[in-house]
Length: 144
Image (cartoon, rainbow, N blue to C red; front, side):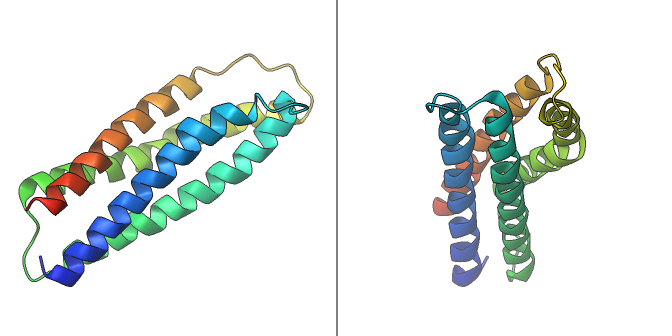
């Protein structure tokens, strides 16, 4: 991996990691504790925030992939495995979990009394795996 490709990949990974930690583990739970924020308002805000986060994640994952593809040689296998894990988790979240969460939030925003979704637990669990994979990817990129 060239120095420029490695720097771009490392920057993308740590930016992605910071965004996930800040939004998923700080903003998301704290917004529901703010005075006057109802479940409906929190869900409406959350949908916008996570749509933005997921768009940024897709862009950063693309930067990571392009950096690896543009390199003169492939990064070490441990970098590829960790990065592939993070990207695979993102794809599962977008294709499987987010649609389930969206269906429930659509019902709540329409005024229905929808039961709590277990998909939130899946999303949080996947976020933890993604954070670990991104942290490993970043460390492996810095120590290659």
